[in-house]
Image (cartoon, rainbow, N blue to C red):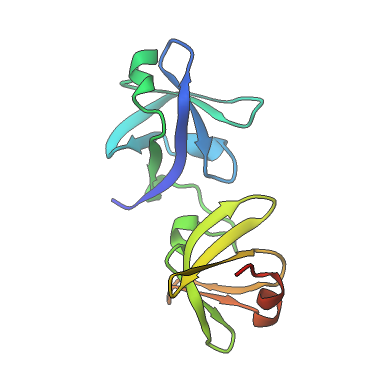
Length: 166
């Protein structure tokens, strides 16, 4: 089964086994749509779900009855089955599909391989080539095309050269 990393357990919340989760989805509510999450390859049905004023998700999962049990999940990644994932709008992609892509210019010059994407004011992509990291923000017009079929991320070299941090 193909899975997506959809969040990370920050800490237990309260005494009833609820988990505070940082979500890696567009909105925290997208995690609820999965219905079941996987932690260390074990499925857990979502019993309760709410979003706090801090933007974190608070979840109750079947099989985690109290704070002591919840404590064991601190720092663990939450995964969801790809088939349960919400449909994406045109031009939107899951990060897991972009990681590992070859980053190239429109002329075919290989700049590196996408190793990480961090969400700040805009997404910050980290690519690596010959052991060196290059960071660039995914701002307007820098990314020309996501070619999922050929695992290529095509960028505008002129804009890339202006904004990339070597």
